Length: 131
Ligand SMILES: [Zn+2]
Image (tube, rainbow, N blue to C red; front, top):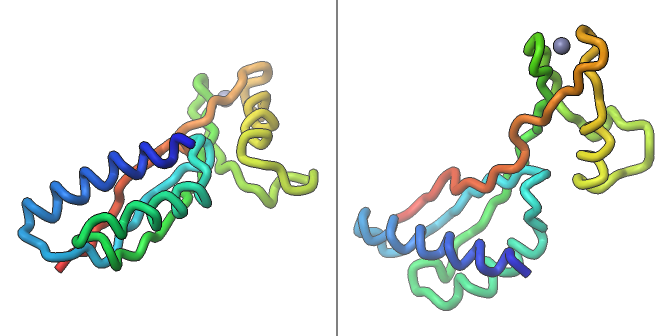
């Protein structure tokens, strides 16, 4: 479960931030998790809840997860489009099989040019509210 080590790393960042801002506690943490980041959001939340009680500063922190919409871009003409789940006809696919599905997509303008995914693999500490 690599989410646990990711959250551990994030806790370290949060402690640093709190210390630098002389904050007593962290109220809210917003993390951006791309659908292709390989992070299982449920495990991430679980790990956060498990680890936050170990620190006075994060004891009552609320974690919010944002998932950005990834984009596919053509390396030839720069045409880009969002990868949206509802554009898929098939029944709900996991992000990974979705990547495989879209990964083989060719540009509608330049025939035979395969578009590449841009973004979607980020794991970012986006916003931290402290007091
Ligand atoms: Zn193109």
